[in-house]
Length: 174
Image (tube, rainbow, N blue to C red; front, side):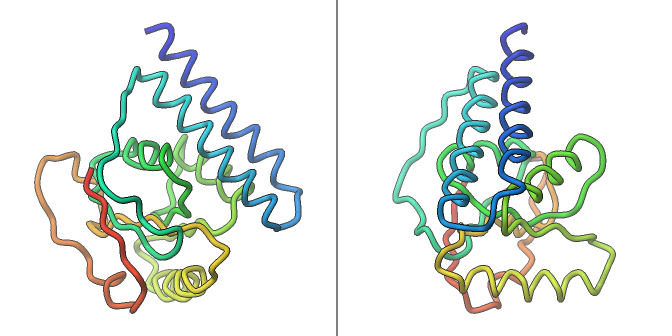
């Protein structure tokens, strides 16, 4: 409805505006705190625009390491960002998702985008992911180990890459 359209517009404006403001700032704890706040506020606006009520159960993952979750749609990312700030790993997209990825990359540090067809990208992402996880000042990394969005139509096996890296892995079920 009308509220949903306006709320989504406010969410996108807060996301793009916040990260455009953050882009020229030097990397620091203060900047990372502002990044987390920007993502939190934008995700709050998105969820409110959908009239969503989200309840989290159980212990929260540690602030460090890798968080793995099942993946049904892009909304999963927004729902999870409502609770905690994550560095995202995913396939590079075009269109509106590509614009959001670009904004996240300009204003946020630690997001890893790759081209699925590029074999060299896999090795580069693996190295960057390991460096990111070993840095105690970074956000936890959010990974969807199914490797694809399945829209709850069927189940696919998790790709094993993240589980073979010897880093702490914290599962979340959506």
